Each structure stands twice: as C-alpha cells, then as structure tokens.
Amino acid sequence: MPTPPESTEAAEGAGARARHAWARLGGLGPVVGLVALCIAGFALNHDFATLDNAMNVLTRTAFIGIIAVGMCFVIVSGGIDLSVGSMAALIAGGVILLMNALGRHHVPPTLAVAAGAGFAVLLGALFGLAHGLLITRGRIEPFIVTLGTLGIFRATLTWLSDGGAITLDNDLADAYAPVYYASLLGVPVPVWVFLLVAVVGAAILNRTAFGRYVQAVGSNEQVARYAAVDVDFTKTVTYVLLGACVGAATLLYVPRLGSASPTTGLLWELEAIASVIVGGTALKGGSGSVVGTVVGAILLSVISNILNLTSIISVYLNAAVQGGVIIVVAFMQRRRR
Image (cartoon, rainbow, N blue to C red; front, side, top):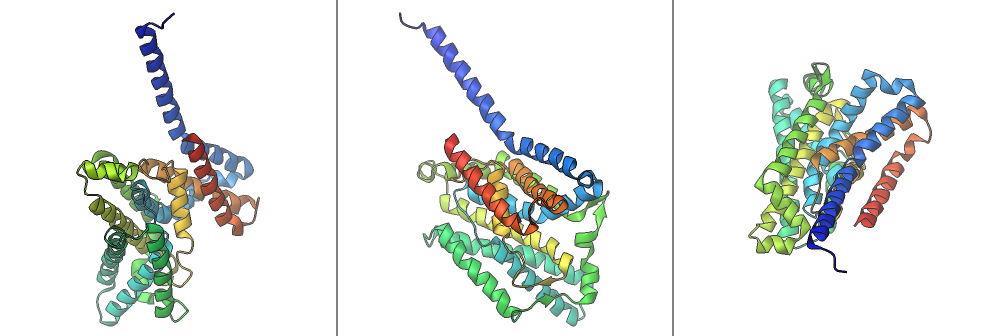
C-alpha cells in the first residue's frame, strides 16, 4: 500500500529536524568538553578553580587564541599556514630591533613602543600578503608555501640574533611592560585584546559578505567562481588577516620575556591549528566558527594547565597531547562525514 504524501512529508520533516538538532548538539561538543575538563581539573587539584589560575590560563591562551582566530579564516577557506610560529619569532625580533634603534635616537619610550606595535601588525600583514600571492598567483599549494617560509622566517631571525637572543633595552622594557602585565577591571590586557579580536572575527565571518565568500570558497572553489566570487582576492585577504593576528599576538607576547630567540613561537602553529580543529572547523574547509575556535584554544590551555598542576604526565608531552587531539578530532570529522 503506497505511503500517503502527508506521511512522507512528515517523516522527511522529522528527519530534517533530527539532523538539525544533532548538528547543534555536535557544535556544543567543545563546550561540553571544556566543562568536563574544568570539573576534572577541580577534582584533581582545588587550586585549579582559583581566580588567579583562571586569569593565568586566559592570559596564556590569548596569544594562541588571537592567532587561532586568523587561522580559522584560512582553514575555513580551504588553506593552511604552518609558519605562524616562525613568523611570530621574526616579527618579535624585528619589533625589538626597531624599538631599540628608536631608543638610541632619543625617541620617547612610549612613542617607540607605539611604533613597534604598529610595525608588528604591518609586518605580519605583509607576510600574510606574500603567502596569499604565492598561493593564488603562484599557484603553489599552501602547505608548500608555508612550509618554505617556516624555515625562512626562523633562519632569518637566527641570523639577525647571531644564534642568540635579541633583547629589548631596559628603558623600553619598562615602558612596554604594561602591554602584558597591566589589567583593566581586574582582567589582563592580553585577555581584553583576545576578546576584541574574537568578537570582530566572529562578526566578519558570520555577518558580512566577505565571511560568506570565505565559506563558499572553502566549500567548493569552482562553484564559488561560477557565483562571481573573487576567489584569489578572498584567499589572499584571509592570509593577510592571519598575518595581522600573528603580529598582534606577538606584540602582546614580547613584554613577557623582553627578548626574541630562535625558539620563540616554537610549535605555535600546532597549537593554533589544534584550537581551530578542536573548535569544530572542518579540516577540508567550508565551515567553521570563531566562537568554537576560542573555546578550542581555552580547552587546550586548560589541558596544559591541568597537566602542570597535577603532573599526571610530564609537561614535556604537552605538544604530544595536542598532536593527538588533532588526529582524534580529524578522525571523528571524517567518520561524521
């Protein structure tokens, strides 16, 4: 006996609602994981739940989180950037050299710091522009381009520092320190900057035509071209945004140590990519969430913090844990598809 059309439509509607509900539940996965980790952290060590520890976790998250917001745009568009840690190291070295030079020419420390901050963001954006042009105009795979610049950036810093460290002069370090150590309403400045970058990034990705273009390019580049989307321009801008985010994160990080060395920013690319993937962004591109990326960055920082407080495993295995998380989440995404 044939099924009535009304019954078929009702079944299809119920199935669509069930899929929508399941998708929403899946999107809450990073939040659920973060809550579970916080509960576990408190159970293992009560110091985990203190306000000081929470601010410490958020401050350490800020640097990677800002970079991860930019990385979210790149991955959603179908790209990748393996060079962000090396890029941050070279930007840090360049900023310190610039500020030291300005200080020696009797430029007031505050102006020297302001010039260094602008230079950091500009230099990062230029590096991102170079990546974008090599990928779009040069028709080179993002993996190859950024793998090459990874070596170039870190080798250049090693050459500039003669294998050692480039150190900020004392007077400039004192003027620069509040960028990292100051607080506003009890919240450290890096956390406020992280929040601002995340809000702006979420608004661009979800509320603008450019954000829709980024998702369209990542979903199907050829279809996006047929829809009159300027694919090359869109891809290039995502790398420029990522470079600017790396510059912003670096200028916040430099006052922490007051120097740049060949080990600065080591494995930051792993942490940034892990934050984006854990936050629910598809590795193949086409869909992603800045909010999820923020949650992913905090989740990874919480894991590291719990390992530091409890010594369940050696802190030297933090990178191994993050690498394992990337593999597991990528496997789950593949199974879900």
